[in-house]
Image (cartoon, rainbow, N blue to C red; front, side, top):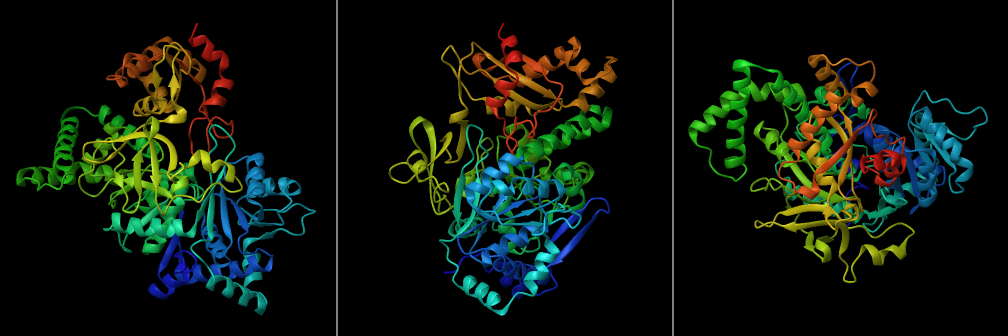
Length: 603
């Protein structure tokens, strides 16, 4: 059976006609959606496929994409599939060294770049990448180097493909017809928190299986739905979700600027959207701030609405129980006066459900969102498993869990409580690293996730910690830092947290405050300051944050609690190497960069 993705655009054009919109680009400035129809999409894919063949890209070879989300990325992906080649998406925030590493590791033959900075990186590494022969710039305003006679803009690339020689066109047709589920669809490079990134080999069969599994689990979705493409397409969660949406005929609205996601959602008003917990943590903090600033009847209305929403949505709807008549009537009242307005302010007033994964999201936030009628579907997966391993079912999901395994995926708990996975969505291995197979697969073929977990009494999977991320204090106690960081992330005055404690007497942390919220607090309390440094060093501010941390740690064991903390005057960034491209903390970098501050917390 031919794979789904190779023929997808052509098949959907036949199904929907040339004039139906396949995807849009979100224009925040004009608050509009710039459409691309299935017909235009199909034409561009064909021309790009013929252009790839013209420049010499062959079946089984890689091309690299270094760009923020844009329609051109999707066109390039599907053009590669028509040639039985495979795209390797690189995070747009990557440094030149990171780009060079991936381009060389994948032996990419061409690189497609976004803006001027991305072209400049590609041009700078060209001489150090022996397999790299071509640069194609998506941005029409990219200015090529004066001595660059080989690079081209994407419009010219498409024009070259449209005018390709007859034998080249025939070759693309031949390659497309010979496509196999065993062909590589992409390499997803791990974020490299503890070492060099590795390219997880995901053949087309992995995506075929993932798409079919999601059709079963998410059976209420239809081509009447719309989705915002929010996470980078270099992230397996977004790539697999976007492919699933296109397969379902769901219109994909592409956000091109990740810093403007809240504005983009407000413009597109999607019915569904995959995201990471940080988006919803910020939503929660903003709503909590709004609630805390209200007084009198308005505050009472909020509180009663939340209590009613929690009772209806968590005690009845979640469990598939019939909602009592009076409770339903009360909920509809608050739906009209409170929840509809709240969801409209966020941009999710049309929302049906929102898959969320990639890091822990506290149960308190999940319960709050469900009480407001925002249907968060918590899931779990990895790059190596083509994203989803498990997620909430539509009925009977357990708050605090990551749901149940998709049909066709086997999950069991191995040594050290490690979660083991087997199924058709599991990667083939790491590209060019057959020596790692023994370390990531058990002798009988189970993929070792590196995450620890358990099954609850209802069969739902519960994550407990990241095994490689576990600390062991000098007193012999194990600490799961991500769980603590997730708790503190609930607070509207806390933006980032890095927990410290490996081989130490007690747990400490670096806290990056939410500076705007903290400045507002300082103004309210009459705390004078001239800079962010003044704020983080202010005794009253430190006391205030300490009180909030203590409340958030309620229920933790004594040895798990943060005993001392340092407020930092700036955020951790990808550029400084402190965060991975998926915004995970790089503890070794932070431990090195802030060694003096860490020692001071243990004096």
